[in-house]
Length: 237
Image (cartoon, rainbow, N blue to C red; front, side):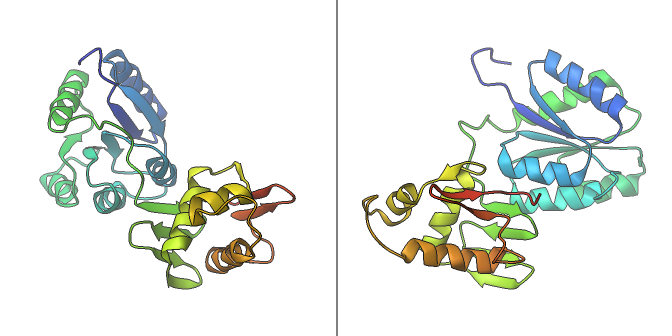
């Protein structure tokens, strides 16, 4: 690995902690930046937030099957390489994994040296990303949004967002957990001076809450911070 390059980023999705611990230690010894989660939901959340070069994916997980995660990654993050690990080692299982988009498949128990060689061979296929790309798809609560096409899927139904609604949502998402002032939103979304007197911003907040909040009168995602602005919260408390 080039010592001057940023380390390749690997996400391990594995619920057997002792296996994950050994993989993490050995991959870090090879110079990779490694993250680990034990279930599919946490994997989806992390994939939405950060860029990874390789996904090391167990097939049998406690909440979502590895095959379903594989399909999701291929649809939403097509550039991520996938190495599937599983105790199901028949030809049919291997073919099923590859058919869902896995780049390689290693049955358990496996030889650690072979695993490291497979990882190295996979990562040679694709150059390291110069920077973390902005996510196209974003999930929060029970909602998901295609930020390129402006399509929102929510428990209330599907909605087509306007360009300005998407722009405002992107600003809030980018600064999730932080207070975003009215002045900042007016400047970044509408390109007007911070001291502009307008109800447009308030009307947009009302619309976004109608789309994404279970109870718009008591919002959990797009919160008002009195006297300061708004805060976007991804997960419900």
